[in-house]
Image: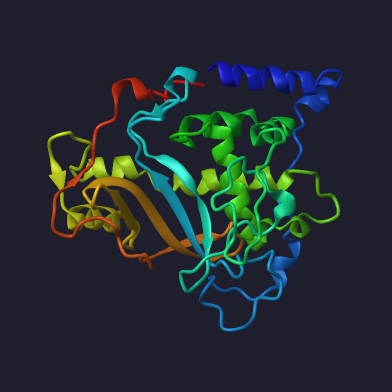
Length: 308
């Protein structure tokens, strides 16, 4: 809550001296995709001709992953960084290539990750650590307290401050997604508009997959006693999404930690239709041993659905 109050104060300071009408007229952050109406329509990774306008379809990273974490603590509880009760959390929105490979940190002029991972790319390029203002200030400058509030509730990092994690996800993944290229915003582009637009898209994609509710409605809830089979988990999720997602497990494949939903996208990553496809990555969860879906540490989570 203290962080949210600080963001409100920052926004008010930024808006000091502005008229009442301009205060409530927030700048737009979406790209200029008017030319896309004239482009051939095809799902990413299913097109039979070269995509000429890459602002219209994620290229070459057309295998789009909406990824989520199941963490049981954050390590920053004393700073008020808590997990949302009865919900998985956002990891990111990733542009894998159609063959399952991927690029990372594609535009170092938009590198906002304070702890790059990897710090050196496969070709030897060094990714310098970002030392500027955190990306939450970019969002505040656009007046998007609504977006920041949602991110603070559901895009929660384990082992690092949220703002640093958000910067990592943008720098590593969004810069490799063609529909977030600066050129896609046209001549009226405002600095960091693409960052806010990406965060909006991440939230939209996350809202498509209420993983906690899907599993709970199928009789699968966090437990420190019960274990579940990989087949149980995959079947429950496929029944509601139409495809088998990737499930990630730690501790020799016995502790559930992640889910990745795979898609082909018709249109831009911001607004297009996401069609679920089976995971191209083999699950790291055990096919034979019981899988723990552990309860969270009670002091590490909070009820966010009652908060404004």
